[in-house]
View 1 (tube, protein in one colour):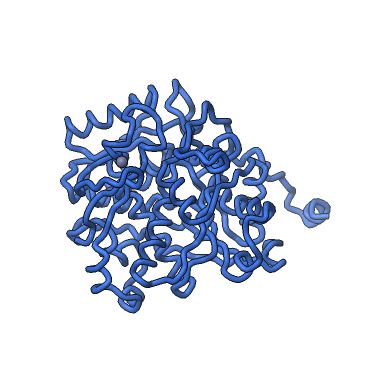
View 2 (cartoon, rainbow, N blue to C red; view 1 turned 120 degrees about the vertical axis):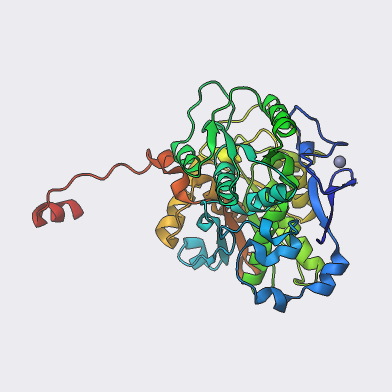
Length: 426
Ligand SMILES: [Zn+2]
């Protein structure tokens, strides 16, 4: 085991590697705060340097556990393997901005086993929870975490419970839950419930759930989730020939993914596997951009938005993102950009129609964010056309096709004759 401690990236305190949802010094239990998310996992760098080199990693099979020394699960029998990770880093070639000379890549996370990047963080966090003795797995989610967790629980043979938030990402009275998501989660055998109550109340319930039943709530192993997200960065470096790109654009809600990916690049640099670090950019939907507000106003800790506006990307619509993600974008010299529904939709269509990649609007936000950053002059020519930009396409389009049913109309009927077909095509 090379993981040594849980570390708070706000106050600097180290804690033992146990279940800890947030830093007991900094967090505000029962209320929303950027300081509820400050934890990451520290590793024994000296030991890892002696043990690992690029050649050793390169000869292992693709996937999460290729990097097992850099993850917090000790016993191989607890490394639940559904085939997560090892996703394609696609070079975009036909988009107009690529034809004009920009070097763009996307990490196609929708090809993970349950259709989203969550198979990485939850694959690692759920495996860690089971190794620590959890008798069941539970979570509160707008969908993708639930699918990833329920699939791991199925393979591990333990029961699972998913509190599924409405498609607006809120725990409210009778809000509609996303059909594509509850069906998938239910198919894995999880019990799915639609909760009523505010988020603070529900997280308190989660703690009770753990103490009474011995189950593990994914929120309380969130530091281990960021470790799973690190593998995205590891793969990008390997896929670019042991180099980091100039910048990485991450659709950002809580910010766990952005922070985890940054941690992955930092760890690879500390191990001497890459020479440079990328700039990290958070992409957030208009009306739910707490990191952009914090970054522009140079806030010390991101403030909570009074309200969020409805938009096409509920998975990345939160009143506040974690401090850890804010720290990552500041430390890396990156920043935050905001994108509109129209820009996300255009990105969904362009990725599909130019590049053959279908992802949901919250994922396409990555490309919309790259476009916005290029338009704002955030990236110089060397970064954009030589060192390359990477967007994280977090999930598959089939996760949320219903949301686009207003955009793409049902197909018109056509009579099965050549004349009818010909007149229609003209
Ligand atoms: Zn702290």
